[in-house]
Length: 364
Image 1: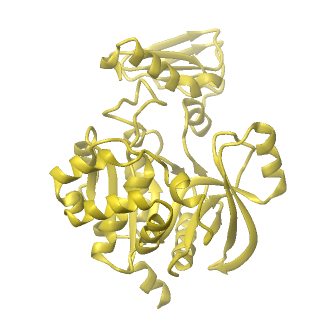
Image 2: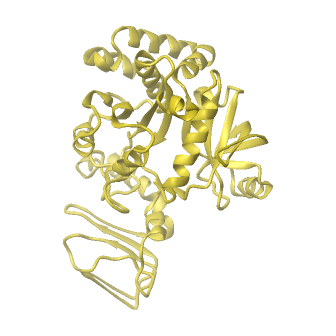
C-alpha cells in the first residue's frame, strides 16, 4: 500500500533540450541526439518515456525541450498531453528548467515527487532501473530529502561528475541507499582512478528525485533571486502563459542544478545503481555498443570493407567502400560527410563550433 501511495504522486521530468553537436552530421540543431534511432526501436527519447510506463503514466510526464524540436517531440510522443511538452525559448541549463517544472507539479499536487531524467541515455537493464526508481521515490518521499541515482562506475572516466557516499542508511526492495557526502566535478584521470579504486564514489548521471516542494525550498535558501523569478513566472501563469514564459525565461541565470542546488545542500541520499547505463556521448560509444562484422567493423549492408578493421560506417544512400583503413568513423548524410579517427570522436563538437565560426550555419 505504501508504494502505491508514493507512485500516485510521482511525476517524471524528462530533459530533452540538446543541441545536436556530438553526433554531427547525423544530429543537427533540429534533430539532436535524443531524436536519433541509434539502438533498438524508436528514438532515445521514446525509449526513455517507454521505460517509465510501469510506474508513471503519460499524464504525469513532462518533457522540456526547445522550440526547434518541439513539433517533432510532440509527433514522437502523442500519448503525452501537448501542454506538458514545453519548448524553452532560450537555453538556460537545468536549474531554471527544473524550477519551472517544480512549480507546474506543485500546482497540480502538493505532494508531487519529481523524477528527473535525461532523454538521451541508454539503460540496458530496465527492470533494475524501475527497482532503483521505486527505492529512490520511497526515500525522497520525506520532505526536505533529495536523491541522486548514482551509477556504479565501470572505469575511471574524466567525462563524468562523481558523488562521494558515506555510510549505507537503508536497503529498500534490495536497493542500497547511501548518505551523500560530496558532489565532485569531472576529475583528472589520476583522481578518477583513485575515486574508482576507493569504492566510495558513484557517477552522477543527472538523474534526481525529490518533492517539488523540497526543490523550491532549496531554491529559496540557496538561489533566492532565481526563486523570486520562478515565483513571479508561476504567478503569471507559468508555461501556460506562452507570451509571459517567452519573455521571462531568458532572464534566468544559465546554471546547472548541480552548481545551483545539489552542491550546496546536505540532506542528499544516493541510490547506488547498476542499470547498464551509458550516456552515449560519442560515435566511439555507439561503436562499442553496436554489432560488428568479423573484422570488428560496424557498417551497413550496402558497404564493403577490404583489409579494414575497427571502423564505424553510417550511410543510408551511398555504397561505401574502405580499403586498408582502421579505426575510423565515417558518417554520410545528404549534405555532409564526416571522417574522423574513432578515438577522436569526442572532438566532433569542436568541428561543429568551427563550422559555425566559419559561417556554415546551414550545416548545423
